[in-house]
Length: 151
View 1 (cartoon, rainbow, N blue to C red):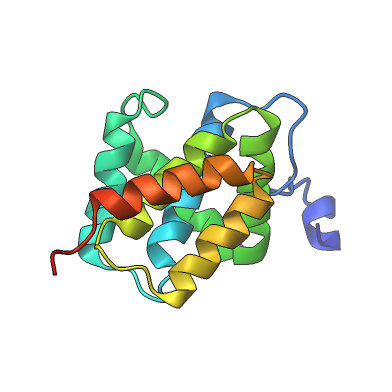
View 2 (view 1 turned 45 degrees about the vertical axis):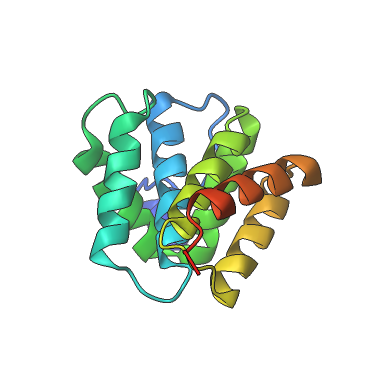
């Protein structure tokens, strides 16, 4: 945190709280979703809709997704590297890393194509979330099969 933030009594938004709140977890999972849909270098309207629909379907978000999405976007815009690190740490600390990874895979694979940047994101994310290789392979294989393109 910068000296001016300290003097102004500002809190570092990327500090991992001792007790992670539901709001922190919501922002963390949403952030990972934002990173997933942007991992190919652009944000497609349909991918944003997919993220919102996924959030609506998850009991974690239980309404108010626009507010959570806005808070996550501000963290994303503030410092992307720190935002992803923060999100992974929050998810891992409270045992939601598998859920966050599964959400990311569902978003990345949903267009039926996995480009090299998306593949790198998924591999890096699995490491940042400290996931077992067998779990990562199972999720990736499931979504690859579900969203495969006809020949």
